[in-house]
Image (tube, rainbow, N blue to C red; front, top):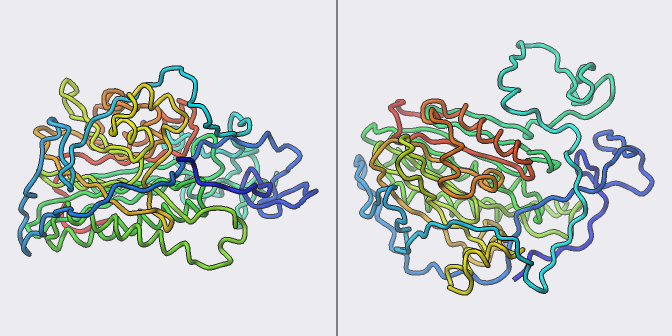
Length: 442
């Protein structure tokens, strides 16, 4: 198996990624001064794999509950008893990747150019930005020279630099759930996206929803793919749960709908591929969580993850998802040990994703009944690369994360930035059980 084949791409602006013409001294799109361009960046994108996925036929989904009912699913597990069982009856094996310094497998080669320490005009550190109040109506100050004001087109009137895009750093809080997404220190744009919300079941029981998506960087328009998937899945969950749809069934339907939304991007329109005709169809990973008063449901495709972190840190934390990755596949098949699989350069290449070129969509879902309060961490690999095991994740989650989810999400994003910020980083925190918030969503 190998990553998606790509042809050589045109030179791109390191600030906005627009194609450049030979001899350009400034970017025609953002005005970036090309005379100070650093060496080409070494992104470490999420890679998709070719090859067939395991068939998903014969999945016996639980029937939706009757209208007005808030029953629990027929098969549910305590989070403390992980591994649990997914919707297909398959065990969820907790993994503890190792990273010994071994030589990569022969014949595998992912060539990447040297990478600068950071991109210019990186998004502000969320922990600092969160503490600086900007008076309403006050003029924006350039993040590059800190002197000039920013005009309506997004450029500094003093030095001419384009300002960070809105998506470079995003935060949202909805009832008991919150999420933060950041571009990181190495990527030129944020290709992650998320959706959060809260609603109520037919009997008034509160429910919280979080969806996190990671765009596949080797594909065309990965930022659009992740945004479409997160928005579609989140909207469907918030609409289906109040109707009495079984949470696990709703999660399955949400992932299928998200996949269809990403598939549709491949045909929009022919001109959309003008700047990158050599790339693959838009693609992304997805992971989501639904929390009610006594039930936790997760669903995923790809290598974005969900973790369970109990409020009582003396209790066991758990990873609730299994990666659709080359390394996980090798270990599950008994072909390699964890040490051997995760030492290989192909370890983090994904074998499942949403997109028109995915061989077969196989949504994974699992349900749990935690026996104590805690918080669910829903994140992309931009975070878990710096805290892979459940124990490591529990160490960096603030003790008050369930009570202050937005603050907790900011702390986790900061941890990834402190670790190097090599990738976009997105994290949502969902307290368990869902505290009463009333009906509706935000």
